[in-house]
Each structure stands twice: as structure tokens, then as C-alpha cells.
Length: 308
Length: 194
Image (cartoon, rainbow over all chains, first blue to last red; front, top):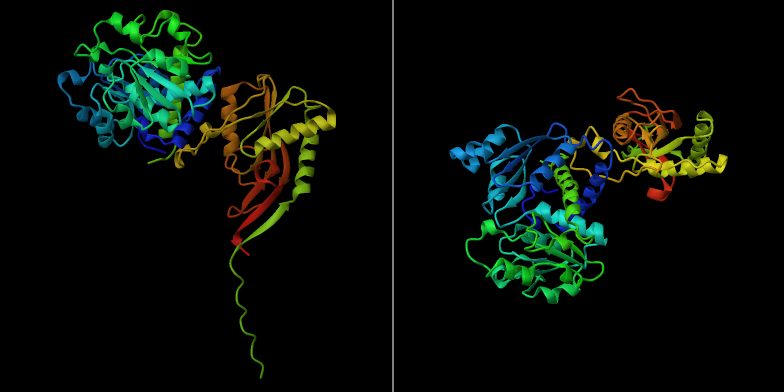
């Protein structure tokens, strides 16, 4: 088993499948009266969050607690980071406190990779800049497998702000490992040149959402990340929504069985309309539920045994 | 003048293998445990059999099958995976988690009979009791094993024992079953040299 989970590309097909299978067992715990397993008793998991997050932090916290680990939550706001402490010094502090795993979210791409060299414990990337978010890709893959029964051969469209999306990068890497075919869709300004070939050969790029929709099993809408945008990538929100937003009429052009995903948080009315977000095809709430099971599986497989 | 005989070459040093139960014996033993369960539980009403993977699972199914043949009662069968409750998780590489499948009626208020192939240190059963505690509240818990080889490290005993095998700690007992290994057999591998 791997020691860190930094990238969707860290996982080969067998390991990724093992995580998804373990997550399926972890999911049964959520249905019990006692939602607790003793597997990580006495282990310490630190949630190190330099960026705002609701679902990912809570999801990791719930996952660690259900496995009986001790959880320490750290957010940059209100910590010594505001006094100028560096990531390395913070990491060494955590190390001195005996953290067995560090779950890190950071605005700088690559921060978890650096962290992995500084601490003895396992590092889990919970989103770094515009780079990667591997547990999101795992929970997306889990959700697709749960809804559609398989991953190999699925056709997945990832739509929107690919440029700033760590979710898109991790999903392309993981889904292509698991045999799905990904098409990146968005305005040319928001899809980096050559990204498809650089991440995973076989990935397609399209600038026309309407031509892609009738042939896909999964549409994954990405959030338009205004906070990371320093330029005008498209003329107006209205125009973006017209060309790349998923609304009711577009959804009805999807094949009967196709599902609609969104990693959250949503900009309702921008990349997705409420009609679509709240429709039975939408898996947005399931994704959150599955996130806890998948993160339990990741933490168990990284920390459960003697993998040092 | 007679010479003393030359020292014989010592036989090749290899551990001995002894078949304790052959295929037909295993079936007889399972039949007997099924009868004992029926006798001790007065007809196996309100009873659930939970197999502990790997080989407890097919044994539990066989017991339920025999019980239904002998007395025409259907005993629900389930699987209880104990991986996450083991006390040696950290001493080994991460173990794969298997499925836990409880019968649809659940186990609350039932008589649960745990089924495993070999009873040795008792640690597996301890883990199973902990796991059971998290999935429900049975009225009572009993234990059925195909083989008891002794050397308990915890205060645990079986209610139904197929075969008691006195062993040395250096020996090992290996159960194979048709469902998982192709044949029904119980073998004792000698740690001591023959």
C-alpha cells in the first residue's frame, strides 16, 4: 500500500479498486446504530487547512472519528500562520505532536508534496491550489460505480473551469486509470492547451457542450472559481451560463441513464440550474455521503496496518 | 570379527503431516454439531448462525443446511468480518476488509452462534464479540468450531466443538473446505521434526 495520497496518479487500478471496495464496506457502517469502528484507535489525524472548506474538512473529520482516530483540526485563520509561521515550521510542530497522518489543503499547488518530505506520517492531499484533489476523484469514481455499476468503458464529460480545477485533474488521472474515457469541455480560455495529452493520453477536449451531451454516461459540472480568476476568461456570467451551464433542456438531451455530478459548492444559475441540481439524475448529495466512506477507506488503508 | 553396522544416514528432515479428519469425517462432525445445536437450543428457534471469514462462512452455511434437513427449521445465516476489530492490525501490512452480511431479520434479541474453523488463542473470537457489539444486541452468543486446538490466551471456550486436537505450539492445524479449497480435510503439520 502507498504511504501518501498526493495525486490521483499515485494509484494503480488495483489499489484504486481496493479503496473503492473498502469504501463500500465502510458505507455499511453509516447505516448502523453505532457508527464507529475501532481500527484507528490511538492514531492521530491532523486536518491542516490553509483554505476555506466545508465539506472536505467535515468529511475527513467524520471519517477519522468513525474509525476512532483522534482528530486535531487546524485552520490557518486564528493560528500562528497569521504571525508568519511557514508551512515547514507548522509541519515540524505537528510532527513533534505525533501526528500519524496529515490531511492538508493549501492554496499553493504542490504544498502537500513538500509536506510529505518533512513529516514521518502519511500525507493526504485534500486539495492543493489548482493542482489535485485525489479523494474527490475517488468519491466521484465511487459514486459513478454505485450508480452505473461499472467504471471501465464509461464516457465522462468534465465541464467548465478546467484551468483552475484540481477536481478535474485528479478525476482525469484516476478515471483513465480505471478505464473510463474523459472529455474535457469548456471555453478555450479555461482549458489549458495540451492538458489532455499531458495528464492522460486518450482524453478528449471539446469546446461545444451540446455536441458532447448525447454520448455521455456522466456529466461532471465544475464550479466556476471566481476567487482564482484574475483575468476575464469569458465575457459575462450570462454568456457562460448560456454556452456551458447545464439547464433543464440540456439535461433532457442526455441519455436516459446518464447522471449529473458536481463537486460542490455550486453556483446555482451559473454552471448548473436548480432544476438540474435538484433532479433525480443529480448525485450531488450522494457524493457528500460517499465522501465519508471513501475517506474512511483511504485513512484505513494508509494508517490501519504496519506500512512503515 | 564383526564390524558394527555403519551408521544409517539420517532421514531427510521434514515436518510431519498428519490427517486428523478426512472428508467423510468432516461431514460427520458437521452433522453432529448440527444435532448438538438443535439439542442445546431446543430446535434452533430464534437462532442466527454467523460465520467468521474465511472458513467460518461455508461452515455456517453447512450447519444451517444440515439443521434444515434434520428438523425442517430455517436458521438465518450471516457473515461477520472481524478485520477492523483485530488486536494485531498494526503488526501487519494493512488487511483487506471483507463484507459483513447480517440476515435481514437482524440479530437483536436473537441467539447468535458464531462459527469458525479453528479455535486457538481465542483472539479472533474476542474480535468477533466486539464486532457483534457494534452491529446489534443479541440475546445470547454461542460459539461453534470445527477444531479446538487449545492454547487459549483469553478466557474463551466453545459451546460446540467438532474435534479436540491436543497440539504443541510449534504445530499448526490447517482446515480445508470444499467451498474454499476444493477438499474437506483437517491436517496437523508438525513443527517438531519426525
